[in-house]
Length: 334
Image (cartoon, rainbow, N blue to C red; front, side, top):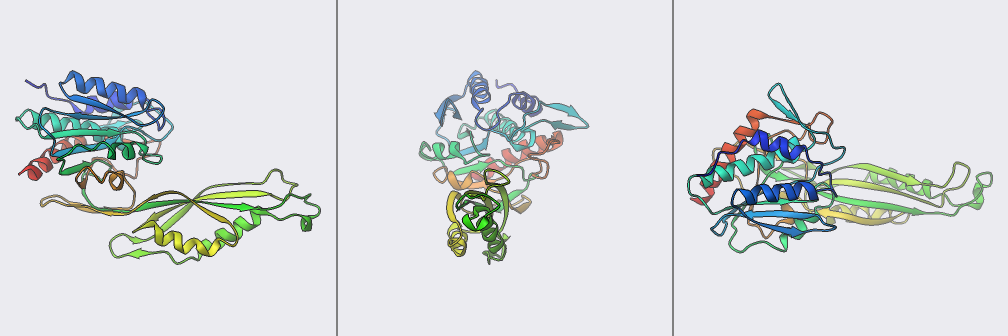
């Protein structure tokens, strides 16, 4: 008989292994061993540089796959439990979610259900290379993908996409006492950023207006040198296809080169009766897992504490997520 699984203990075990993006190997290997020891058929899907996804199935061909990611943002800090909360990097995003999904599979398995599997990917926090690799290895016959991100246990109806671009300006160096002999790349970049602030961006009735942040700026060589180069990276939270935003940015191409770094579209998802629903402004791996069935999105924890130094998930929310994940699968398998 399958021994019941404690999602709190599993969450803490996972959180206590540093798996910041690029360093997922140890945590993925631990999880693969853990699942093999419980009788799963585990496949390690190579990603890059010794990193891999973990795909675990039971004896029957899966119709439903639970999925989330094992990587986290830096900096790593270990777990602790207090006031009914589990703290630690990844407790909310997304190791608590992973633990709840494993516990749900175990609960379903104890009733004789075998048509369920788990997909745990690397790299979600930076470029989703794990999801891209997984999409090339999707098993035949999967009908539904239940993806886990912090949704406060609400079923997602839609998520925004992302368009990440780099603006690159070129100039000519000169001594700063003779600015007329140079051509400032920093000035060009600043002018371009001011133009971007006034660009009309797409809107959507469900997801709202596209917005963006300037996340990185680099440029120049010294305070007394006219800057020969400068760049900035912008992250647009899109409400549709990234091409519409990319087209709007054409207005700055006389000042800077516009290089696309990442483009993941917004998505709409299936919902189920009896579940609270919500729209979410962030992006997930769902748009990159197109071969894994119809997507649904749900997970314990709040995005408002993800990526913070107080990241945590409530133990009650973990337990509730196990019940919700189990209920979802039962509905979908009917």
